[in-house]
Image 1 (cartoon, one colour):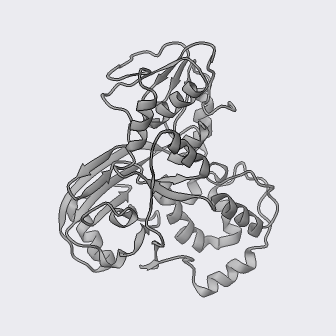
Image 2: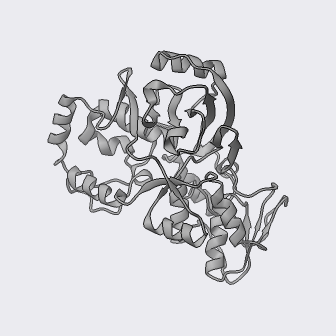
Image 3: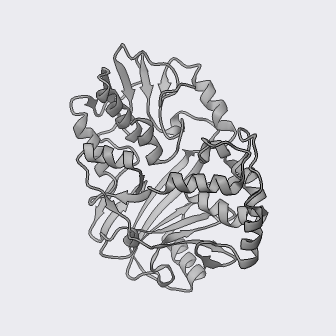
Length: 374
């Protein structure tokens, strides 16, 4: 694997051909432009941004993919350079997990579980983290039940799979001297995340690819389909077109309702265990105060109809609602799975004549993609 943000080999003394003007291709172009490297971006569709799109509905904004960006000081500096003015999420929103048929807010544990957790804090973390799943790493601290009912839902909304299918080193920061206590590692993670906050933009997350497009003006060709890629290409297209096995499926459906779901008032949303096809519900109108009507994004592992959604809300919260509008998006076998198979497939990519960059190479989040190119 290369120390660069891409995998594979690129000759930076020659022109780099970037295939795809999704967010990864645009960020790669931004990096090359800052470093005075000759490049050009080729996009097969008539727009940049890939999955990132913000639909302007009369009742507010509907996001097709990322709802927000987790920012750091470096990212805020990057956004300032692009001329973007971020807006922050509403403060003090509760983040629920649906556990034991009820909504649980932080710390999500019962009193007896908190006592056991406190006792386990000074256990030593595993040292051999390379092959450990997320579940295997955290089980000595949390126990089986809390791993299944708290840890897995917390990751489900991001990776669309449970903690047993995720590699620890791919999901959590591993720049730590393992073998110390879990308390020390949690303290380390807290320090790393202390400056993070969720942000978006007044017109939605799509402002980001449009700002990058403006910076890269003259270096992007739209509506350009390629049957073969030229020499010295950096492939930045969808994971579904690159990986074979290490993929999972997620459906995202946004519903605009007549009234609020009362039991979710004052919350960011709610996450669910992977035993359910329902992964999470985001309360868009509460996260960012720019929607005139209640807006909820449902993340699922199978497609939900309007009837399914309404029945789901009635079953979970004992409330009846009516839908004003619905927008649905799906990525069937299109989300990279950060498990055992992915490193094998990435190594196979190294045998091809091209280089690759995307949310399947290192870091699935928008924040990770940006930070790799700064």
